[in-house]
Image (cartoon, rainbow, N blue to C red; front, side):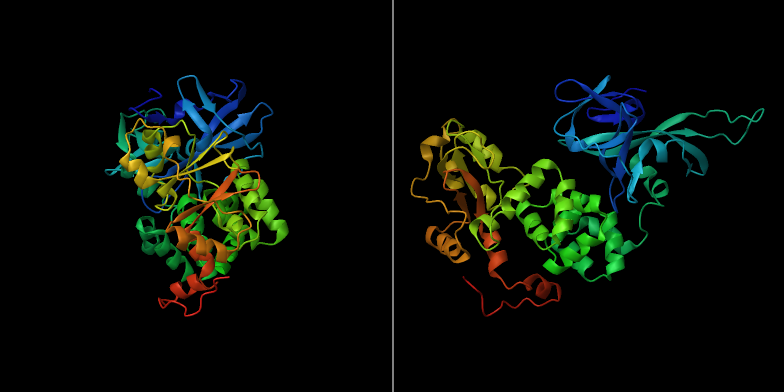
Length: 427
């Protein structure tokens, strides 16, 4: 059976034993299994690989670190966590848990011979197909003869294969198609034990999105109810500014432990935000605005702001800096409005259309100064620049509103009160 079944799918049995190479081409270890997370609806998501190091220690490598898979090797990028891999309750090991499992198919017994996975988006994989071998009812000399093999979609066996790993509550299955605010409301209305059970069954991204819609005290309680490794994964998926707000509400010892378990790049973004008081531009900003160089073209800028993960506010302006273009950036040059980009030729360099009248905010600007800034410039995003003239982030209008509204406004929403508070503190 080939490694590649279609344009982007891979049969998992052929991954076992493949060399895992880092960005320098050095061997890290060998693939021993594939970790998937059962979902309440849809195909299971591939979380990563179990890789055995030379010292026989098995570690976890997230799929986001997997750069390429071919016939002879797996290439990874970035820093790898070398702590020993421990399977969570909501996870399934494809080779250990699924291979050779017997199921019923069309009234006959069959066993799982292999499972394939497919890349649905860049570095995001899901289980795709299952290779089944029929188990004939007759035996000869105590041996079970091998029947014919057939390849079926994952959906054909999902209900039976992962019954033990999935909740049977029909209400839980509905969460997969809900918006984050609706998932948050469902979690809010559950008792703590049920909430923890449901949270463990949701994938990291969906749970992170729901977290950001919960009242602050509920976020803290739910995060503390999760296993620490799972809690760190959820924080990795959250917007850095929301993760920083949540971590700042945790006991110091727990906050530091979760930061140490997060992906290094995500943790550093959060640590940088924690340096600023909460009700300042630095405390409210996101460190991930759209940043390009002066020589980049309108076409490249438009391609960047079209990214599906960007909010409308973040995509409304491109900031221009010298290298590096990650925060804290090189020298800040200015911003270019999306409307201006839409009016200019695709080949024009964006350095020629910078808005020179747009003054940045300092990181220590208070909430009152930030709100007056938005009112003065009629914007939905504002650059934050430190005394060294580096872009350190950007405040969006929704970040500002989150901090201007009463502390319990999300709780009021969960209780069904849609009435605005008559008194809003403008600082």
